[in-house]
Length: 310
Image (cartoon, rainbow, N blue to C red; front, side):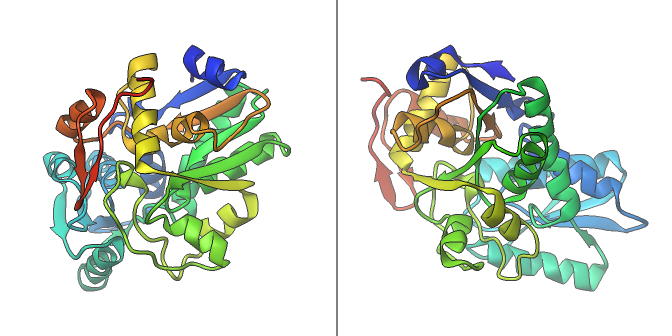
C-alpha cells in the first residue's frame, strides 16, 4: 500500500492505494485463480469465462500447475487483452457479444471435455483468494475507516468485505462501478440477479453479468456493502488521469473508479480511506490518447477528450 498525497489533499483524509497492478499478471485476479486451482484434484485442465484479467490469472496459475487452460471471452473484450492471454499459453475461445454468451462456451467444455471451471467471481475459493487483499490492507493500516472497492461480479468486493469486516466491524464499505452496464449494481437495486446490456467502457474489466443463478457474490455484496456508487465514462477518464499525472501510475479504468467518484464529489469520506488499484492491463494506444486529452471511441460513442484539472 502506498499513500497518495494528492488524494489526501482532495479528500482531507489520509488516502492509501493497494497496488495490485504490481501482480505478475498485472491484476488482483491472480489471488483467486491460484487459490482455486490449488484446491483442485486430478483434472485434465481448467476453463474460465473472462473479460481479460481473470483469464490471464487462470492461464498463469494453470501453467505453473502444469494444466491445460482455456479462456472463453466475448467479442467486446479488447484485442490487446485477448493477445496477452494467448501469449501466456492459454487457448482462447471467442463467442457472442456478452459474458453470458462466453459462459455458454465454457459450460460446453466442462460438459464435453471434463475441464474444471474456475469462475471469475462466484466461487468460494476465488472469493477467499481475493479477500486476502482486505486482510493485507487492514493489517497494514488498521485505522482505515472507509474502503472503496471496484465492483463487477462481486468476487473482489465480497472477499474484501468479509475480510475487512472481520477485522473492523464498523468499517464503511463502498462499491463503485460504471454507470452503464453494471450488473451487480442493477441486481442489488432489483433485489435479485438480473441481466443488463453490456456496453463498451473505459472500465471494461467491470463489465459482464453476475449470472442469474449467482450463489455467493451477490448475496455477500448485498449484505455487506454500505453503498454502491456509479460513475460516468468522463469521470473514469478523470480518475485515470489523476492517477497518471498526480501519482505517476498507469492503471486501467476499473482501477480508477474510486478516484472518479471522489473527484466528482459522489463520495465524501471522514477518516483514513483506502482503495484498490485492481489492474494495469489496458490498450496503451488508447491510454496515451486519453492522457493527452484526445477524443476516444467507446463502441459507437465518442468520449470527448480533456485533461483533468484544465
